[in-house]
Image (cartoon, rainbow, N blue to C red; front, side, top):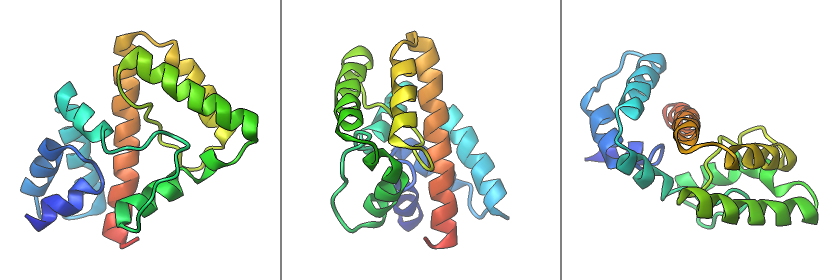
Length: 155
């Protein structure tokens, strides 16, 4: 279905895309965002992991010209800043995070500097599992909301 394919560029959970597409039409972006948030809250952790699998590591340059790759590059633009030491710390931090939690570090990086992202990464590496699951869900919701606005706005 075309709507589901479009939605998957915002969040790569198939369950989320089916649920949100099934609620169409939406009267406004706010109504769509509300339905998206509800669908995200209802996802099983395996569905969240499916969405995470589509996200590149923070600070990695995303290749390709498709919409999702362009969005990711724009969202992570601040992560490219910072000096070599910050970039090396992001690489190491990503590795340690993935060893600790078993999935990519997800953060809504839009508008954040590399130093801010690194600080958040360091804090979140110390989270217990439950706290980090909640943080991941919150960051996924923020990224998805931004991408839905871009999708509807034609960006």
